[in-house]
Image (cartoon, rainbow, N blue to C red):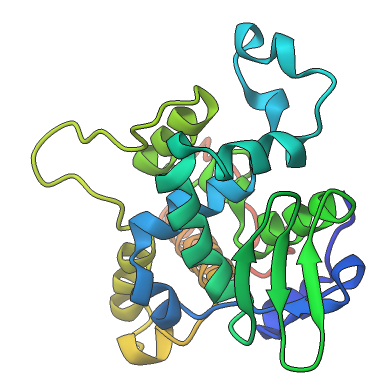
Length: 244
């Protein structure tokens, strides 16, 4: 996987999608809010379909098929209608200037002066970009960010198992609210206007939230040391590289 430039991600600029001959927009939180956080999480994980993450017994018959071929088969099936609807909602955020049409062998992007597509040849690059852009390793607990959003992970598990029902709620009122929770925490913790935070991209939100946590941990550590506490576990300097 080619690592995207950290400054490019932090800037919030559109990301060049070279093999697609276009750019992928980094949607702001207030844009994601139009479709809702739950539909966003479900749709983005469907776009990141990977047969290698299926249960072993589920993928034995898929070895000779690419991720894209399986993905398009599901999208164009009657059983995949719900997945397809959520995926299209996310695609409208990623390609706001394009008319999106799901065809048999590609996702057609009809732009003002030309056509592009997500297809079998550029699907891996497309997935790499959105995985990094939306910090999917973060939400799945695969890095030191680890916000431990159990419900988002649960949806990923449902997709891996090929369940048609993508989200079963345990307990009344449970829902995905990771982004709104982080915005609320930063608004109080950093005394920022919520409307300002809603202009952030997902990458910017996670970056600032992790830096905020590091600063808090570091301040508590220094205060404890100055008070004479012993045998403290050393914490990372809050100004260190987040992504190292």
